[in-house]
Length: 103
View 1 (cartoon, rainbow, N blue to C red):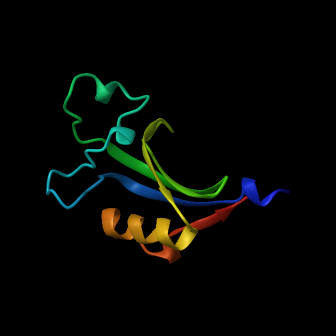
View 2 (tube, one colour):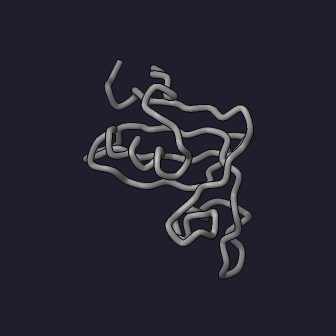
């Protein structure tokens, strides 16, 4: 199996809101609303996140935020998996031990 298919997954027992330094309880950048009905208009409202996925992509790693139905809430690009997990820790208070390796 290709390392491209490896992913780290963290499931929440209850949905959590993504946070940022602005104190609004969500990340305001455009990527957080792509493909989501919550992105209609110019203001992105809070989006509950039920699953985090850290997955290798060409040239780096992505931290995907998914809702309870597996729908896309947002993503960020990172140079390595550790950086993606640091972002997840800052946003959601999770640690590396909260992630499970999935093939």
